Length: 310
Ligand SMILES: NC(=O)c1ccc[n+]([C@@H]2O[C@H](COP(=O)([O-])OP(=O)(O)OC[C@H]3O[C@@H](n4cnc5c(N)ncnc54)[C@H](OP(=O)(O)O)[C@@H]3O)[C@@H](O)[C@H]2O)c1
Image (cartoon, rainbow, N blue to C red):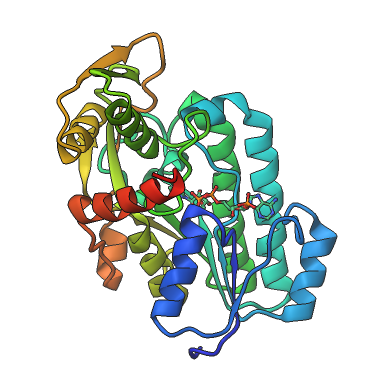
């Protein structure tokens, strides 16, 4: 593989896909292939197969998916399972049919059981019940992992499935119905500031613990592992930055130098009580996250203000 190898990045307009493109360019990769959803709906097998036949990419990083936070996952269960299974089946099988050597398939930490021991090791997959609110999404992603494992086993490929923890950064989704918890917190605190409110209301009791990672670290992990031969198919990508939702809210409130109260809507679900990844497999290969919570927040908040045209 060299810097001119053709790399197909799916989902290039999304949070993770756009960071992968940004970081590939930064590292000098010149031959990047992208296509918008309107020109190629990755759920349509015949079109995906034709696209692969025509372009013959050498490397594929699949960052296209139907993604969302607890509200969206709970509400659009059918879309989460259907879209994700269709997209990944088409990508993984087209990679095999077209002899793509390097494929990165992205999943997330919600593939692991709700009551996993913590920090979560890769081997805990399928060892218990999933969190109900995102079960269809998790089942889809688990089938993607099992598909990559089966192809590696039967066809001797080296497809890798990276499981990042909660990811944030420029180009995130700040729609309160569909966003993840951290961009939602940024938006709620920012709006409280603009409207001079003295409180924000958060879902659940604020005690659920989450690990978050800045998106460029995830993109760098994709680039790092696309070139690596690994024994493992499934690899966790965590930052070891862990706080409760309430601590993240206070962190943002302090960053914006505000004095506001947090109220909790305890009628709403908390989600999984704790989700922190054991990323020692990734560390053994030489990868670790680099960007601190402070640096990640500053970069993210700057881009958020541009998005909302402040
Ligand atoms: N965000 C997180 O916290 C997080 C954490 C861990 C892992 N991940 C993983 O990272 C990957 C990307 O997530 P993300 O947060 O970047 O999501 P995102 O911002 O919603 O981006 C998803 C991308 O997929 C594209 N897409 C969706 N359906 C498509 C279809 N049918 N055909 C073609 N393209 C389609 C979207 O295109 P449009 O822009 O045109 O809609 C968008 O560009 C996912 O596999 C997710 O599991 C994300």
